[in-house]
Length: 205
Image 1 (cartoon, helix red, strand yellow):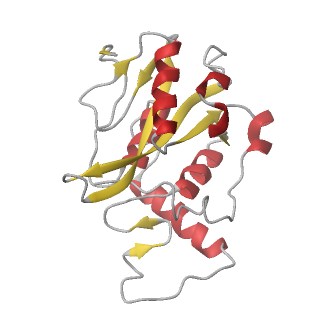
Image 2 (tube, one colour):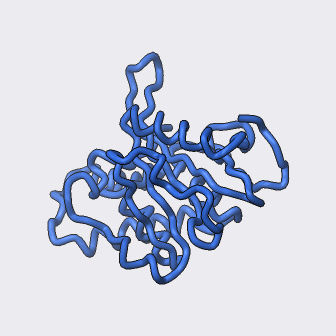
């Protein structure tokens, strides 16, 4: 991959706001989503849950779907935020690999791809997860990872698939962000342990 096209919008990593950066990079717009907006979505998800969380002295800081100070939003916040923008999120079946993803389709169908990957910091002592956005812009796929200094262009679709297969092979999850109302029925927030963000979706600092 090579760094190209300074016109592409790219937010850099700050604290644990990688989901916020990923969403704004996906929409190619500053403040398409804001910290306050994602916090409100996270809080509304808690109110909607039938299982109430047990209160602790740190409940005000460490909330079920995010950390009040640093961000660290989970998968449920991602899905709810995108649905508010009229998008649909399809959880890619990791058993099929990336070859089953239509990367050559029209940009008005597949808006982009969000990948949740495990990361290790400080010599492997600290383990967490990180959100990465891939998007096709002007016919070319880019890696808009907020950890990168600048956006990086993929050479071709096979390189994109190689990146996705590598992410899946290392425990990553691939989410397809779709445009259009016809895809909304595919997207919903599940109540299983996996999709509540207990294992998937939190971001490193």
